[in-house]
Image (tube, rainbow, N blue to C red):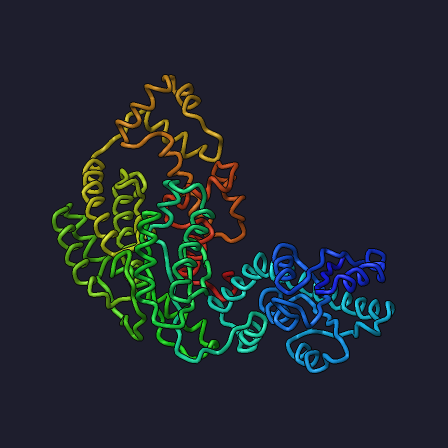
Length: 537
């Protein structure tokens, strides 16, 4: 129903208007009548009104004043003027103020008034429909468009997109070429995987959602709202001004509310939105410098920051120290290497790879003595490769290595002349031959003729690791070999080494290697020489 109000100081006019039109029959609802503009305003303030039939000349507040006030307080209300023959100048003014039409009271016919009312009704219905559609579009934009916009923006940042892709994005989401230089920022929650493993937060999604809320709220203060979640605790931002002050506040807020630190990399100033991907790569490279800078920092991109460096002669120099069993010299050498590389001249990935090579040297020497790198007791609950690959800073890698180095030398000293008891050798032989079966400790103990508890204690005392740890190590040794053969799927390898659940297998593998099986395969195959007839996918 279209809601109508009559405003006229003559009671006979009001009565006539109420009676000459079959209001409800034509979809109208009379919500009241007023003798002046003030009464009309009070009624409209209390109850929405679509059409007002108003006289021009009224006491206290005339029709012109009423139209002016409605234009401010209720701009959607249509005003139809009720005029006399001598009100022509006032009618013209009323039309200029926003009245939509007029009728002469003395010569007004019911059909004429009804015709004008129906025309106004159609206007109101059309405008209401447009407003409803706009509200629906706005709602959809708020719910869906933000997600679509972030997805498209993420693609433009992380992928090399064409200028046409950028133009389409700008047109669809109302982006304009910046008038001033802008910046791309890459942010990362420090020690993200550790925080997820500790399960302080109910879910990864909730953690990232909370971080996005913090970014958005602080962004409003600085008139920045282009934030995008990338992956694995990483976020990106397009900043129209130098973001350093805002990033400092973001870091403080994340620390206060989540007890986490966040590191940020800032690109060089950019001129065109076509440079978004370039800016993101710059921001990512700036963020890489966290390896030297430490967690919680704000780092700017510097062109040519890293220079080629040969690195230490790990294979030759370290093998000599291991053969001499010189634990102190190994620590001193690691310290000298750490101090020399702390200048940050090498690319972090290259330096990390050198530390991985060092772990390989330690592992090869343990194997030479009849031991195994993965049977060395853990330090800080980390396997060697996992530690070097997952720790985020050079300082953390060095600190871990100095602790693990002592444990490693204790282990190799125990290997010298070590001969396992016959029952322990039998357990080892059983596991090596049947690692792909669903082995249980109590079954192995029963076959050997010991109780499960006694055999477990004896095996731990002799070897320094539990039976299940040894079984896991043998399985992972075989898995590493199988991963070099691309004909096997990951789930097939899991089954071949004794795991029915490939997800569980992948988690165990990452705990030991610092990367998932598929990542390990790509890493290893990428370093292996290929023949002319072989392909690496």
